[in-house]
Length: 481
Ligand SMILES: NC(=O)c1ccc[n+]([C@@H]2O[C@H](COP(=O)([O-])OP(=O)(O)OC[C@H]3O[C@@H](n4cnc5c(N)ncnc54)[C@H](O)[C@@H]3O)[C@@H](O)[C@H]2O)c1
Ligand SMILES: O=c1ccn([C@@H]2O[C@H](COP(=O)(O)OP(=O)(O)O[C@H]3O[C@H](CO)[C@@H](O)[C@H](O)[C@H]3O)[C@@H](O)[C@H]2O)c(=O)[nH]1
Image 1 (cartoon, rainbow, N blue to C red):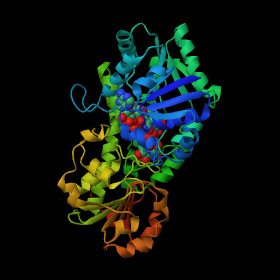
Image 2 (cartoon, rainbow, N blue to C red):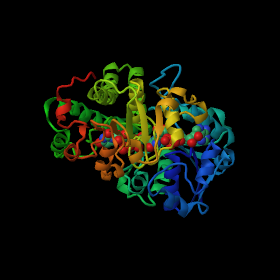
Image 3 (cartoon, protein in one colour):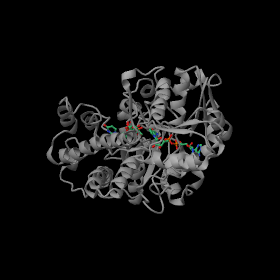
């Protein structure tokens, strides 16, 4: 029986390994982590992450050929294939701070593998890493082990949160990069056989190591670039009376462009896009390519612009002040169907409103009050660090922020409602009831284009929808971006 051990029981390690175990009953999969609370949760009824379909997948394999453990040494020792899916956040200090990937966790993992391995192993990069990381990892493994043969593969993960299970069941592609030596090719084949249990062969791509590592950063950069492109156009739509949904539809009808990933929004969030583009920018700078670095940096600059544009629109529409006004925030997660708040635009929007002295009342179906407090107390780029390293929530957050358990109480007596996550339940809210409970004039600022602006205007709301023709109320109001 092939034995797999995965270091890192997070958003990637957990679901990915659960699917491998489900699809390959002849393979034993053990997911290990340094955080025992996370492992305990994976072994309980309340999994540590919310992901549609995940519970069923875990239930079917857990205890059969899927295990979660904190005994890292034992399971690395027994494994034939060691996946490493530890976090690779943006560095917050020192050389490359705010841009470069922090490989501390990866290096620790590699040293641990070298330390405890007593038999040959295939080590698989599952985390997103800078191109050429495999070379450094190989050196650590070789220099610190006693004659053991390590083969390294790059197998970046392309799942998106909220659709992780369907993405893993039916991936557009699985990418495996390896050394172009006979042994390297054999190793690629071994991993290919694992995925071949359920992924059609023509979707399993094999490349050299550097192409695989770089393809992951490039794919995220391309995806984020589409969002920044449509968001940039959304600002022009508001200035001219064009409708961004109509423009995106017309543009996306061109088969060369395609319709996906063209939804204008308050900005992209999540643990990957910003981090990976910053990493790409840093790599370009280190390779003497400042123009290329600037090109990708602009994707993030437009994203930051979009978030501040949204806050400024809220404040300027409400008589240029939100001081002491209750603003309801519907949605805090970075997208629907996840409880993940890493780099969610809601943090920036909330901070912007708090800076203008608003009282913000937040409702999100999957995000806890504790999480919101932690997020609002964090410095930028602190998001992917262990909980115990995060600063405590300051009193200001406690004073100005409340969390509600439903949309109706969150919006009660509010002056304005900001929609920041496209949860399905927000599409079917009773907005007449919400309007009746609010201060007048009542505003809705839709950062995800989930409501029908005309219908809400008929109820009496003043409505702002990203990139849509402006409400008469806002037409002549200058907005400083
Ligand atoms: N989240 C996503 O949707 C996604 C998708 C594709 C790729 N990625 C990439 O995958 C990697 C992991 O992302 P994530 O979202 O799962 O992160 P995460 O923070 O949810 O999980 C990482 C886990 O690794 C553990 N860890 C750290 N050092 C360890 C060690 N030495 N041994 C064992 N466990 C250790 C941490 O305790 C944590 O539980 C990142 O590089 C990320 O860029 C993420
Ligand atoms: O048209 C769109 C599509 C997405 N978003 C936003 O973009 C962010 C990221 O969304 P998405 O890409 O769906 O989720 P992630 O889980 O961040 O997944 C991305 O990042 C992962 C981590 O690297 C990759 O594996 C995935 O392929 C890649 O889609 C979210 O805030 C979305 O709301 C938009 O604003 N408009």
